[in-house]
Length: 177
Figure 1 (cartoon, one colour):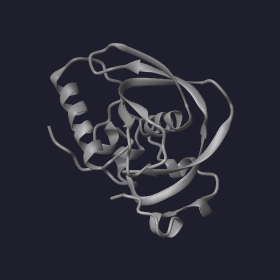
Figure 2 (cartoon, rainbow, N blue to C red):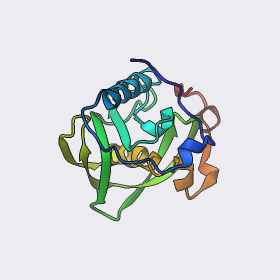
Figure 3 (cartoon, rainbow, N blue to C red):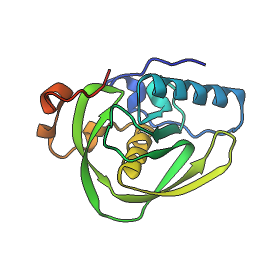
């Protein structure tokens, strides 16, 4: 498999609602997931949605284990999530800094719900259901937003907290392509 080009903000595919996956365990779905894994690893991403590599299907992957783009983030288990659904477990919202492989070199302060339950399937069609909070919940919401054509700047409430990494965090070595 191979790392793919990541589409950048403004590309029409990133503004579209992705379609549900109808068949699991296919060579095509396995190949897509492998390419997503390779792409996320090559870019040091915390997650990746299929639309970010030009595929309009409801597939996301995420996971964090000592990521240089998020050096202070708690670990998030690596997950392949197909046709995800999110159920909020609280109305509590917390702002946090986010970046995105489709918005390279920039960060923004984004409000997200702090606790949720997500469900869906893995690539073989096995059911997944988990509860998440904190950074884990943030990553799930960020990636699932991509499936509805939403990028994190659209969630921001204060655009004065949006800018280039080196301007917002001078002297910090945030890796973003």
